Image: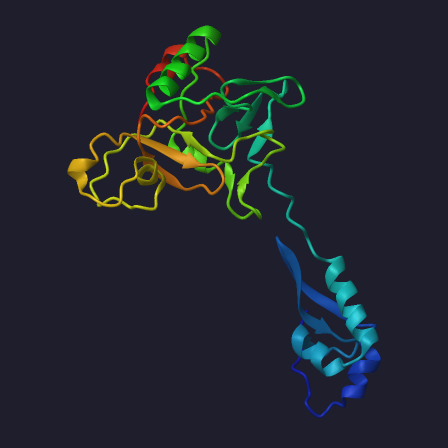
Length: 253
């Protein structure tokens, strides 16, 4: 459709009188409908913002809003990344193709919540717990990597933390990961590992025994910690389960 530029000499009153009968020329944007131009019966086409500024009429503004809203196309919401399994005992990450134990070790899903008390493990015990569960269930359970654990923490929430609908009773504390690293920088007196040892400074020569990494499930922060620290464990497995249980015995990255 051809349109001609607005004649600046045409009185604004004419624009107001004919606004309700006008048509919104719309470009559909996936997230919202944007009215980019307003076409009047007389053939005048104005940019929407300029037209609404000139119209100055409440009725015209309502008409413009209705016309633009009627043509808006809404993008369908993206499917959730994390969903419960059919039996409710797992939380499936559809993007990463892994499934989380809905309950930390020491507790068990009873159909409504995690029953029992969380067990605390040092790092060696945490690795052994993953091996033992893999052997008992024939499923490749393992300790999660630090980044996998961090993805469970919603840092935009107030307060940040794990979704307790998906993970009821989740401890908002540090959890063991399978990530191993020897830090060669100076000790940060304020991080978890240093605080656990009471360290206030030092060099890499004093840090060789710091082999385990943990994630704070209340903030998503990851830190290297003393491997003798006793922390909760939430295991993870492949989804769908196509790998042999021995894959869960590798333990670390």
